[in-house]
Amino acid sequence: MNYLETISYLCRIFINNMEIVFENEYLRELYEEGKAKNKKYRFQPSIIDRYKRVVDTLKNAPNTEFLYKLHNLNYEKLQGNKKNIESVRVNNQYRIEFRSYEEEREPNKVIICSLLELSNHYK
Image (cartoon, rainbow, N blue to C red; front, side, top):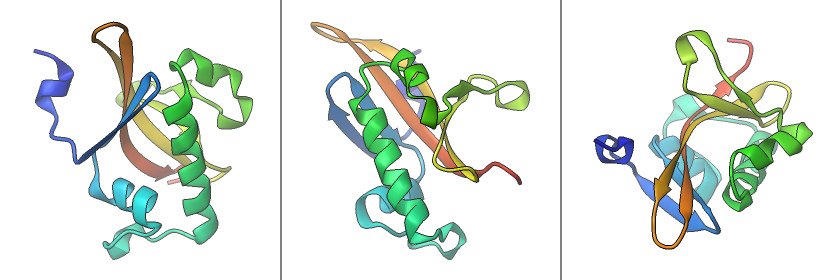
């Protein structure tokens, strides 16, 4: 069974070779509307602007290996209880956690970046 078949995604955006899937509604709202309806997910406007820029960078990346070249993102694969999760830095305090995987399509491979959370580094 493909991983894509097991998740229920809220929104898919397809540009170039990277497809973005928002697994949480608040992530889609932050990206599209600039704020989340749930009060639990309130962020400063500067964090939301930077989040949007990082998601745009992910959308335009041809693959995850490309993210290693962008040093300001500090792309890393997490370990321990967050094994199989990757992250990029939004700023010194926040990061976007996501999963990526390849899906074969005609005529090329598509990298799917499934956004999980906008998390605080220091929690």
